[in-house]
Amino acid sequence: MPLHDHSLPEALALRGVSRRRFIEFCGAMVATLALPSHYIDQVVQALDKKRKPVMVWLEFQDCAGNTESMLRSADPPIADIVLDLLSLEYHETIMAAAGHHAEAALERVVKEEKGQYIVVVEGSIPTADGGVYCTIGGRTALDIAREVCANSALNIAVGACAWDGGIPYAKPNPTGARGLQDAIPGLNVINLGGCPHNPANTAAVLVHYLTFGQAPALDQYNRPLFAYGHIIHDQCERRAHYDAGRFVEEWDDEGARNGWCLYKMGCKGPEATFNCPTVRWNSGTSWPVKAGHGCIACASYHFWDSKSPFYKRLPDVPGFGVDTTAEKVGWVAVGAVAGLTAAHAVGSAVRGKVGGGREAKDAGDGASKS
Image 1 (tube, one colour):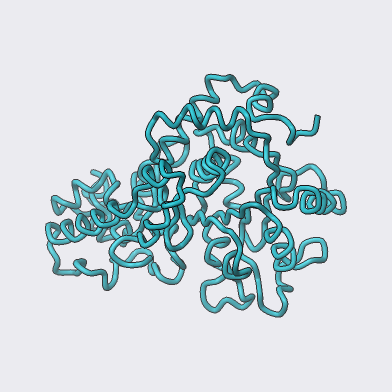
Image 2: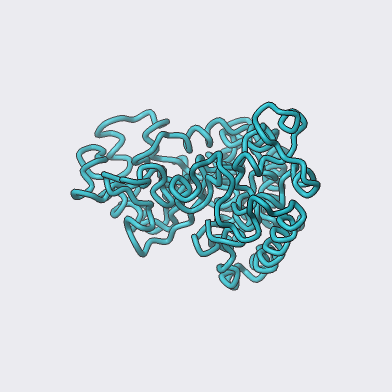
């Protein structure tokens, strides 16, 4: 039987993944999607019956960091479960085939699975000089993306580069690098910004799509609201120190050793949105701010240009100034997050079959666009 003709439970059984572990995974995905717990049964039933869709993973101008993030994840158990949600038939970094055999696999998917397969794009797409700055098998990335992504059921851009061009887009951008949706306008794209993306969010998007047949509620950047709908500052475990006016003034001072707020060290958390503080990394154990480094807003629009220098305090943010008290800054952030939360409503959007989720589209990166 072809691999993609297996259901997910069948594929997991072949890999020795227990039913209990599968249901635990479904529960984790429901939590990540910010859905009520009774949706676990619906997710389990949908994945039980679903024929595994075919997926291809395209890499263009990238560092392979998003692939590494996916493969090295342990919780949820990405290697055992997420890669079994779909039949991954093309991925340059991990596939056994090479050369003509690899390209033949991609051609087969586009021809035989037209309109049914899912595409994950990693890396930016050069558009200058006809796209000659990135070629694979003699074809430009631009040409490959136009053919493969235009014939898919869904496109997911993982990481900053695939979303908005990332560091190749940053000035002076000699290759004309663009994110997928800008390089090829009109595509159905879900953007999972971050440098790199968080695989738990990618898994949740795939589970939502396989369960409900469509994307979760998205913001104006086509990012899922469950992952990008709340200000990092409001989720941060250092927030109490911020409200109390306890700040790190320099690296390795008393505040740094005691886990005080990193706002004065350039942390961009007050205007960035992402679920890093709740989903975290490394089996859910930590994230950059907990580890002692300020947020650089890597999931924000064109963060390489708009959020640097990374170690300087946020410039020109309403309510944030050198002479502003911690109390005043705190109330500004609370007001911003209250408005964003009112617009969020991912759970109700999904309960309404997600069709009405677009009313939350105006929720952006806090008080100002990131």
